[in-house]
Length: 206
Image (cartoon, rainbow, N blue to C red; front, side, top):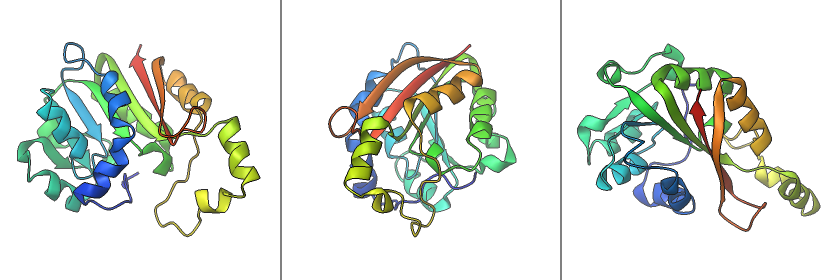
């Protein structure tokens, strides 16, 4: 589970990836409730740095030393290299109590998403919240992909480090529920309804 993101780390590319989901994600946050945020798989730190600029207390970790080096250029004390296979937060973060974990476009790359959710649970404080985004799949979108013969393009086997899990709202929600979370919010983002590029699910730890 050490690879979070496989796309580049240039600012323009990261901003493009967030443009369509940033507004719905921010609607799920409140400075009163989400006081200590951890972004798992933070890439070059774009989201964390944006949250800090809005007054949030946020930190980020990523497996890529290259991405973290770029993130350090803005807020050097907020980013750390992390390999989830170690099963522990970086030493510099272990004294913090995180009430919110955000992870965008990560879980579709993981061989063992259940262990990832277990790690999130261990890192959250009581009644903490998790906000996950991942490419959306549902009946209508899957049908359109089939009718337009786009599956090979959508799930290209030549994409090194590409998506290995396809999530629907039901399957991702089911995983979170099985792990002791209660779903509290959902947003589809990008394109028209039910053909969304991605979905964002927010859940609270029971």
